[in-house]
Image (cartoon, rainbow, N blue to C red; front, side, top):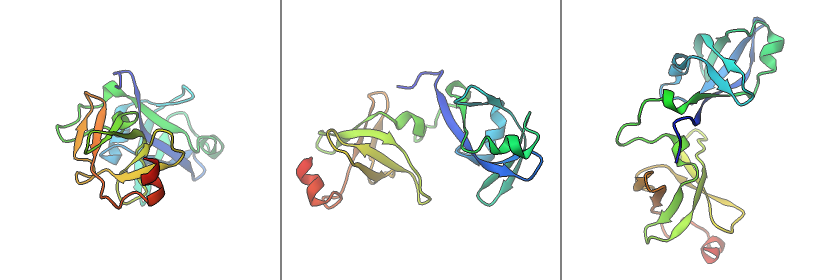
Length: 177
């Protein structure tokens, strides 16, 4: 399970904007503009970035970062992931989880058999998906992260239960499983 010192991905710098060092920023926080309220954000390089100004745009934000004053520096930050310390986040509500907490949990099927392990929780625009690696399989399985497909989440036990229609997996996958 996650420790209180874990870093949680809050956003990513997607590029430079303009000539004064502004960056394009995509936020992963529940309230996207709340990314500016966490104070200094940590990069995996150890650098700290503080958002001084945040302006919404159609697919994210334009951000002014303290200490980034020209386009050249802003361009070097493209792809930099920004993290907050887990202890800075509020406790999730009873019916909520942090995506970060799902990575690595065991996935069980409705019959109580191990199905695999959560390796990622991507979102391609239509909602969160749970990416599951099955033991001994190269390819992963994507399952919608919705009540119909994931009826039980027990992070204290490090597991979730999935309920897939019989036709969800193709014939080859069913034979391997």
